[in-house]
Image (cartoon, rainbow, N blue to C red; front, top):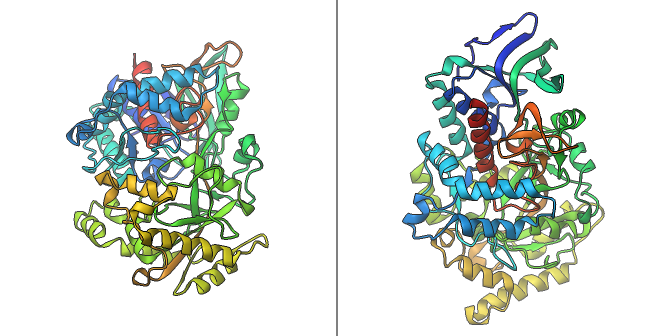
Amino acid sequence: MDSSRQVQSGNAQTGQHQTDVVIAGGGLAGLVTAYELLSSGRRVLVVDKDKQENLGGLAKQSFGGVHMIDTPHQRRLKIKDSPELAWRDWQSVAGYEPGDDWPRRWAQFYCENSREYIFDFLNGKKVSFLPLVNWAERGIYGPGNTVPRWHIVWGTGYEIIHCLLAALEVHPQRANLQLMFDTEVSGIEITNGHVTGLRGRKMDSGQELRVTAEHTVIASGGVCGGDLSFLRANWYKPWGPPPKKMLNGAHDFGDGMLHSRVSALGGAVTHLDLHWHYAAGIHHPAKRRPDDGLSLVPPRSALWLNAHGERIMTPGPMPVYGDTRHLVQSVLQQPGQYSWQVMNWKIAIRELAVSGCDYMSAFRYKDRRALAKSVMFGNKELVDRLIRECPDDIVVADTLDQLMERMDEKNIYGLRLNRPQMAAAIHAWDDMIARGPSFHNDEQLRRIANFRQYRGDRVRTCKFQRILDPKAAPLIAIREFILARKSLGGIQTDLQCRVLRAADGQPVPGLYAVGEAAGFGGGGIHGKGSLEGTFLGGCILTGRVAGKNIGK
């Protein structure tokens, strides 16, 4: 995208700039806000800490699943959905506290307006979706998503950003937009109680920067990135201490700095101990930073074991696509707070996936032929690549004894497998499968049977596959760690995205927050849990709301 148009009043040499609206952060929420503001004729300056090629932030790297309600895709599949049902489902996983008024209002607003604010917006930018709506976060003991709502973008999150940037570039008011990269925002200017802009510095030269603006929007992401120190300091206490070993799947610059700046000027920042992590993280082969993580979508037909080789069954079963927060909580209760998944080649090529765009190449590059091939014959290329590039966490063997030996070589903290117990668990699993579906008295098998009733899941779920089946060899075990990803809390906002004061709940004049920085709305729209796909959706929703209200 061309960022060379200099239309704001400013002096590059002195670092002084003036505009109508300044946005701190060039992720999805900040870009959507900018688009809406251009439509109202406002001059906009987006200041981003990252390089120009990374414009779009973490959304650009995502798999591109968006939670939407009562869409044309659902209706075509005869999925009966409604805002009322979605709101009931949302509350079932949120676990709101009595004082969570703004998060509740934002969540209900999401359920009632996702069609107009999210689907129609993306559709208008020529973003398309896969024909089957996916069914994530179904719940365990009660409903999560009662019906499928996870719409997968054809082209992944990369396509969302690509289409949005293309729309910005041809916007009739494109001349009113300036993008500034490699620039850290370190402070918020306030005069007589009114926020009047931002200050910061250029990353390369260290030159000081000051932006004066009528309105200031914080779109800087969450608190789960950086060196994870902010995350550890705000860990959810009921889970006990944070893991000694945790992988980083959040954005490098999501370090909570601007949350602290908002708090210092009196803004309310809430629920910073509520996070959205994943239970199946492995070391990213790129090693772009310490503990760089890659998030797997683990197979439904694999056995989830702890470091001793025991099946993880407490505080309940470990169903993939059931309740991600429950998976994380369960792993945190295990020895060493990490886990193993044991499977075979046949299971892996059918069910294993990666949560992101880099490894899901057929989706990322919109290769219909490759996608059809992977559905019919399994994604052999993906599994081969993971085995080849991730030897730190993935072991392969021809026999169970050999597999357990190689797993123990990867176990840490002095933990060892109880090999007889692990072998017994796998043989018991295989024996139950061999007895036939009428005798599947195991919660995981019952859930697999249920998953296969929906055609969107049947195409990527094995039909009761034994682990030690010689025709499905070799055996594969994957060591998995908790992977930090998203903040569920953040800067508290009203339904106009205005930042609210901690003291009296009134708006801080001139200051707004959107996306993950705002807890995706209200300082914690999700409560304690999420129905998946609400992160991208929340960025679009809050960006549009902020842009429309400032534009007025």
